[in-house]
Amino acid sequence: MDTGTDRPAPVQPATGIRKPVRLRDVEVNRRRLLRDGLGAGAALTLGAAVRSLPVPEATAAKPRAPHALGFRSLTDEVRLPDVPVDGRVPRWLSGVLLRNGPGLFEIGETKLNHWFDGLAMLHAFAFADGRVSYANRFLQSSAYKAYRREGIMKYSEFGTDPCRAIFSGVSTLPLMGKIPNANVSIEHLAGEFRAHTELPVPVSFDPRSLKTLGVDVPLPNGRMGTAHPHYDPRTRERFSYELELIPPSGLRVIAEKRGNRRELAFIPQDRPGYLHSFGLTRRWVVVFAQPWEFDLATFLGPDSGPIVKSFQWDDSKPSRIMLIDRRAGGVGAEFEVDPAFAFHHINAFDDGDSVVFDVCAHRDASVVDALYLKNLRKPGPKVPQASPRRMTVKPGSSRVRVRELAEGNLELPRTDYASVNGRPYRYAYGVGVRNPRRSGFVDRIAKLDVKRGEQTHWQERGTYPGEPIFVRRPHAKREDDGLLLSVVLDAGRRTSFLLVLDARDMSEIARASVPHHIPFGFHGVHAADA
Image (cartoon, rainbow, N blue to C red; front, side, top):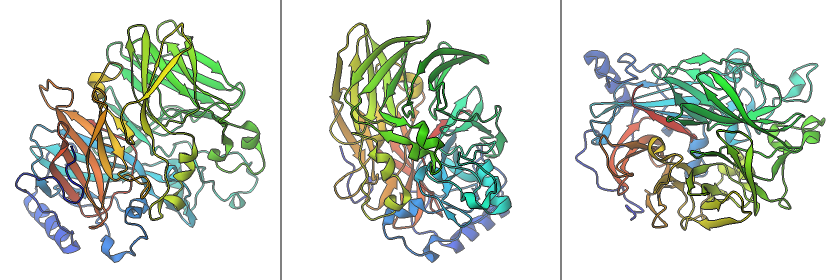
């Protein structure tokens, strides 16, 4: 079902307000908090004061396209102990929703080129007794510290390199700092929180203060990693991969348990193919290798540019599905399929002797170029859309069965990870585009029903949602009995809000609005124990 195209779904009687937030209103709220000492009482009750108030967006020039506000820098670090709420946030919802993504799209005089380049900012919405608090903070990466200290771009990013003319005697290779600009995802494991990018060096941070704690390992040269590691609570193993770009080049798949690292496989590749995520079943690590390949000669050349320029799409080659044996190690089976590109897997599981692997599939890697900021800030940006696709393989057979899971597009997919990851499942959640011909930027939240082969949506004119995070209701018996939490840009009001949906029917339960915009981010987690 659709909850409407122009109007929000009905909500329960409001406990807050939904209107443009004026600076006067924020100041009154701050004075009340200082006087009464109110706070959310959850993980982010960091005193009853706003540390820094954002400049009202109404004073800034309007962007050419409404959604382009989401690609504008947020320079202020903010603490809001009591966020106004429309509707009623369920009292059982506790802990904190943590979000990661770019917060700064300019470094000194340098304008960053790609969505993936922005300096990382962490966001947190904390919950207690139906109340909500909010905080944000820049990740203290080497790039951010250099910007604050020297006012310049000093280190390379995915699609932007620093001006090498200001550095005497440096090579043409990417300039890397000790602490990566980990702006992609968040891992919560064994009580620790770590921010990830596509380098195999996660950055630890405190979920209460959002303070950056640092890194445990040095940054390796010529190596990429995954921003989406997996964890199996049954075996207490963590799974990841590393992509070696410098010879001997190839893909390394890794399992870790109690601090012990075990190499499951090293797959030599002359031209390593780009990866962003992978699948995990009870028996296999599932890798979807695509022909967007790293060219070492370009990387080492005098005009190499940022690392994205070293990857080249070759549609004369197939994509490959590789099954790595979790117990014995090694590649247990390999299959070829028509070339396709995928950032994100949805889920994978064993089905008897077969393996099922679901991804958000693009026709090719042109989506990477479409995510340059110059394109994204245009009215109606042209961005290729991914379709939810199922691939079924059987070791001992070369056949691959491929089918679309449902009509429509889907990206940034999430499931009830703790309950269904690596197992047969029915529901996934993500973001999508209502009319890809008219607008290439996400404007709705999607619920994918794998069993029925259909999608239902939440959408509201003038709003642009982010990745929806599923939170299971206590004592739930149905797979979709829970909430979806999504940070949404309200372009008309030039602010953002946390949206709370009932995952069963995609109806709106509540929204908590902050008095500033939150730039479009990528991934996050909900942690009940933070």
